[in-house]
Length: 316
Image 1: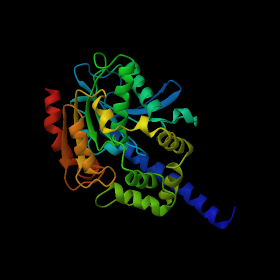
Image 2: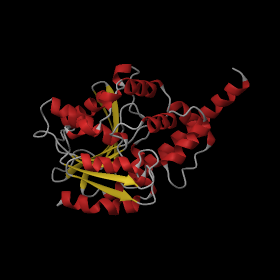
Image 3: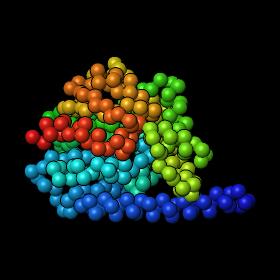
Image 4: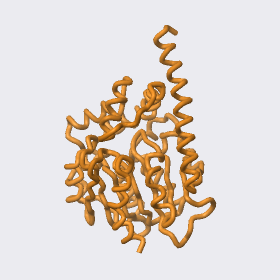
């Protein structure tokens, strides 16, 4: 092992330790908020999720399921959890293939449709939730539309399964080629500088100050074999994975969809949100000022204020 590789390996190990420590601290804060971490082995995959109840959910409360985005974790919602924990049964899922929810490196598993089918069966069959409220970020909202497609194939939509969707900047529509290629480069960083570019694109102001050692760890973590499989599988069948304006019009829809967009989103631009508002039946578009692709973190108080009215309608 030459000096450069040895140095990078040491930085990676140190980054792995520091990243684990950071995760543990956030995890402890979530537990102090009154949440519990659970691990379930379902269909051969160990899936981790947080709930705000220890044993069984409260049958008098509605169920809200939080789904994070690509390369992210349940921690993305940590600033808004306190607003949901009293009035709802909260389930914050870690998507298979992310963090501790490991999936085997079998290429056929790493597809959007496979993830959606797994999530549907986990939610509908294991959790026994048939009318959830979803709060999703980016990829999470995209998966909900594939979940509804699968529910329809099983002849369980809409009578047995449907949802209300709060979707933060879901990349549902197929992007134009230049934006698709730009985002592909962003989300598969090859250097430390690429990680900096990704963070700068995600956050409008003040991207998180991540130590360089953690960046070395993330460089490997965000490019593991499974993530590479997911990208290759998606690119091979883009027409099946992404929606067009025509295909979305005939697609099964949530009972109600609240689209939420940071006004300066540089990953999924606002004009995509405006298009979705026109295409998705019974939908509403809420704009969060002074925010990019992660408004629930960057401007979380305004985010909650902005969706409170819609939440109250559901609660009542």
